[in-house]
Image (cartoon, rainbow, N blue to C red; front, side, top):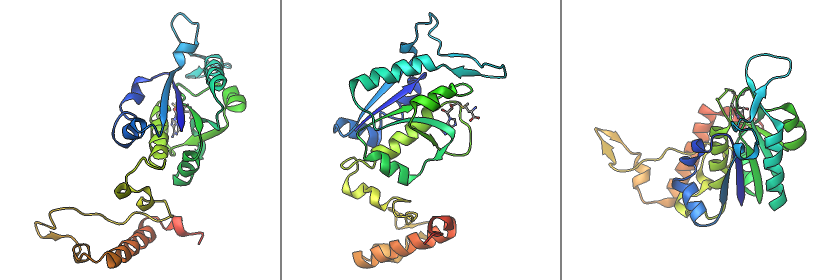
Length: 226
Ligand code: SAM
């Protein structure tokens, strides 16, 4: 899989996409992540990619021309399955969408900035708009990193068996069960006996029950439709 992220702040994406599971997935050649600096696609001598909003009002707007050029260059090199714009008013990102996106070959993620992007980018260039939650961040880099991380850990081979995404929260509309490690007794706060029993059948059953209980208590909405 290949993910191209178009941004005005490449530095913001360096650390989140160069550690841990994402780093290892890149090393294993399971994913190629390419950061595209939008400022490389402007002829402006100050490399600016924003301008005042038509009609006035506060805040600058990301211009269509550099975005168009960046996308056209990428599309000239390969076909893309989705061109995603990160936006607070997009569809709310969740594990189901992460699963869908992890099955694609090539995607572009456009990280917005300023007051937002020229609406024509959304109308004519973008194929999907995704929000990571009902709050407003300063730019689309953190959403792009969050979406990328969630996708990459679902690519077969990115996680080892022990880290399997199948036991993560939301994979089957259930929250993950609680986990513990040594010591088994810390200041009298004990690990449930069942986890020390060595009986894998009973442990699996207990974990499933815990998942169901946790989901009912913390996120009943996840199972509401069943
Ligand atoms: N004026 C816009 C609005 O009210 O919807 C917010 C613009 S925000 C300051 C700048 C950029 O950050 C957006 O264009 C978007 O790419 C990104 N962004 C901010 N919050 C986001 C969120 N919750 N999900 C996805 N992207 C977000």
